[in-house]
Amino acid sequence: MNIVHKQVLKKIKQYGKISQRQLSEVCGFSLGKVNQSIQFLQKQEYMDEEWNLTEKSLKLIDLYKPKKAIILAAGLGMRMVPINTEVPKALLTVKGETLIERLIHQLHEVNVYDITVVVGFMKEEFEFLIDEYNVKLVCNMDYAKKNNLHSLAKVGSDLINTYIIPCDIWCETNPFNACELYSWYMVKNQETDNTSVRLNKKYELVKTKLNEVGDTMIGISYISLDDAGFVAKRIYSMSSQREYEHCFWEDVLYVKDKMIVSPYVFNDAYEINTYEQLRDLDEDNEILNSDLMNIIKDTIGCEISKIMNIQPLKKGMTNRSFSFEVNSKRYIMRVPGEGTEKLINRKHEYDVYQAIKDENICDPVIYMNPENGYKITEYIHDAHACDSTDFSDVSKCMKKLRNFHNKKLVVNHTFEVFDELEKYESYWQGTPSIYRDYKATKAHIYELKEFVDAQPKEWGLSHIDSVPDNFLFSDDELYLIDWEYAGMQDQHIDIAMFAIYSLYDREDVEKLIDAYFDGQCKDLVRIKIYAYIAICGLLWSNWCEYKRNLGVEFGEYSLKQYRYAKEYYRIVKEALEERGMKLCTK
Image (cartoon, one colour):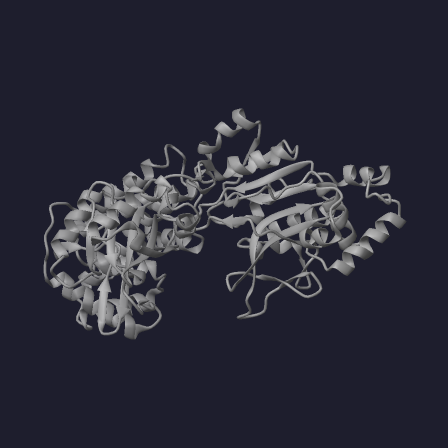
C-alpha cells in the first residue's frame, strides 16, 4: 500500500462515501490516481463495493492510530519580542484561546490524551496545565543555548504513533485525525524564501537550494510506527554531537536532502512567530498593546500600528533587545534580561547618559527609564564593531577613548572594582570557586590593590565596559556605546578592560598601551595598567562564575580572565622588583 492508497483510505474513513471528484480535492491527488486507489483498496479487500471499510482496514487503522503528542515549548521565542518579555509564546491568547490550550483541545478531539510539554523559558507559567489537562511537563534547561532538537531528545526515545508539535501554531480547523496511516510533516502551500523545504513534483519534501523559494514549514509532524525507531535513533545520535547544538529537530528527518516522511499540505495553519504575525491574525488582541509598544508609541509619537519590521537582536544573555521601524526610520529598544538588576544600577546608568548626552560620544539615545533600564536608541546603519586584531581600528578606538577621558566628565557614583568583585563572589551563595587556588589568587589581587591605591590617578567618568564590541564604526563616525557599568574611576582602567576582553597576549597589551599614550606611557603607569589587567581579570572571572551557576557558559573567555589575574600579578611583581620595589604582603 503506497502513500496515495493510504491517503485515500484515510479520507474515506473521515468523510465516508463522497464523489471521486470530491475525494480528489480533499486528498490533493488527481482523479486518475484516486480511481486507481479505490480499485486497489477494493481488490485488496480494504473496502467493499459500497466503500464500507472492512475488518482488515479497521485493524490497520487501529495499528497506526495516534497514541500521544509532544509539544515543544521550551524556547525563548526571541522573534516574538516585545511580547515574550511578558508571557511565553505558547501562552499567547489568540482569538480568545491560548495557543497551547487550543492545540491540547484539538488533540483531545481525536482522543489523544497522553501529552508531554517540553518547557524551559518561564517554565513555571506552564504548571497549571498539569492539573487542567493532565499533561506531563519535562524541562529542557539548555533552551537558551541549543535548538529544539535537544528538547525532543529529552522525550524522544519512544515516538511510535506520536505527534510532534511546535507551540506557536494556531490552526483554524483541527489538523489532527483519529486515523493516521503514515508519517508526515506539515507544510503550507505558500511560497517563501524563509524555509528549507519544498514540495517537488513527485510529492516529496526535499531541501531547498541556495536562494530557492520553498513551501512554508508549519512544523507539526506525525511519526508512525514504521519510522519511529529510525527517527529516535537519529535524535539520540545528533543531539549527542556538538555540531548539531543549533539544529532544529526536523533535520533528523532528512536523508540525502529528502525527508523520509510524506508531506501533509494544510493551509489552515498559522505560525505565530513574530509580533506582526500575531497582529495580522488577531488585530484586536489586547496583548498587542504591551507596555513596551506603548513606550515606543509615546516616545516617537506614532500609532502602534505604525511600528513595523520588529526584529530580535541576539547579543548574549544580559539583555533582550529588538529593532523596529517607524516611518522607515529604524530604532533599537533594549529590554534588560532577568537578573540584571543584580549587576546593573539603572539609576546610575541613567545619570551617565545624562552626563554624556551632549558630548557626541555614544549612539543617539531618545528614551531611557532609570527605574527598569528600558532604552530606545536610533539605529546606526552600516556599522561594524572594532576588530581587535586590526590595530588601525584599535588606534582609532584608543584616540576616541582618550578624547572622552580628557573631558573629565563627572557623575555622583563610583565603580568600585573590589566592591564589585566581592559582590559577584557573594552571588555564588556559598558555592566554592571552581578554581582550586582561588583563595591564593584573590590574596594576590588584594596585594595589587595596595599598590594601585598608592599610584596617581586620572580620575573621571570611565566607561568600564570599553571592549571592542562597544566601539562602532559608521561612515566617518565612531561611537562608544553601552554605558551600563560606567562610573567614576581611574580612567586607565578602561585600557585594561579593552585588553582582557580582546584576550590580548603580552605583545598586544604593549601595543594597546602605546596606542593610547602615543608611545609616551610612563613606566609606573604601565605597571599600574598591568595591575588593572590582573584585578579586572578576577572581577570578570567572578562574574563568569556567577553566570556559570545560572547555566550560562563563556568557554575560553572565563578561563582567560582567571589567567589574567594570575599572570599579570606575576608580571607586576617582577616589574616592581626590577625597580627595587615590592608588593606589600600580609
